[in-house]
Amino acid sequence: MDQPSTTQKPDPDLITTPRDKKEEESVHRALEGYYRVGKPPWDTGVTPPELVALVEGHGALPPGRALELGCGTGTNATYLARHGWDVTAVDLIDSAVDQARQKTEAASVAVRLLHGDATRLDELDVPGPFDLFFDLSCYCGIPLHRRDAYATGLTHRAAPGARLLMFGYGPEPLGNPTTELTSWAAGVTADELRARFPGWALLDVTPGTNSVPTFWFTLRRDA
Ligand SMILES: C[S@@+](CC[C@H](N)C(=O)[O-])C[C@H]1O[C@@H](n2cnc3c(N)ncnc32)[C@H](O)[C@@H]1O
Image 1 (tube, rainbow, N blue to C red):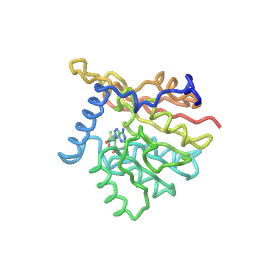
Image 2: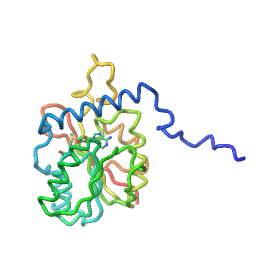
Image 3: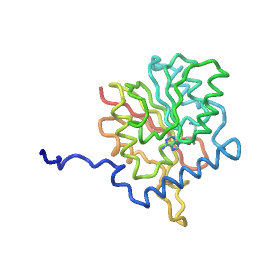
Image 4: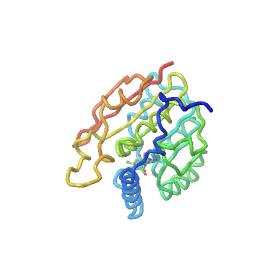
């Protein structure tokens, strides 16, 4: 029988520790809590100008296939579909996906909405390839041990030259040294994205306008 290759990376799902699992459950509970009490604080219902610029601005991308990671109640998936994109959108929380479905139906746009984990895209029917990935503050809250899987999932589904537009909190606002479960609140930095997305170029890092450090990152998959 062939020996397994020693260079092959182990499947992160097979090496998840009890602590990792506990951390994922804690994130899930926290997110569910936000949607249970009504409108979560991030749900402005307004598409950010950074996405509008990419879709409608000078040198806008031509419509193609888009995948939104952490779509929440579907504001931006609806926006993209209205602008001619073929949109798939994923969220970990089922009530968010339900609300997104209502929003897209009310807007009479077709969006493929999926309840699932952006770090486990192989478990969902999202073969791609995609021309645009959009992530508004999903990745920066993902536990550190799932981030390589997120990057690999996107890389496998990226068309040559695909863009990833990501908004994220820097490490400072989210880190809470008093809690035991801190890595899911690690935030995101340009250096981390450069390291975790080989085969992509980090084209731009623009600070957000929030009162705490936030960033808009634009990455492009190599052609
Ligand atoms: C800050 S919210 C933004 C939601 C939406 N993009 C918006 O602009 O209103 C981040 C979203 O990511 C989702 N999320 C977090 N981790 C996720 C994961 N691993 N897979 C899919 N969705 C996730 C959360 O449930 C939440 O809806």
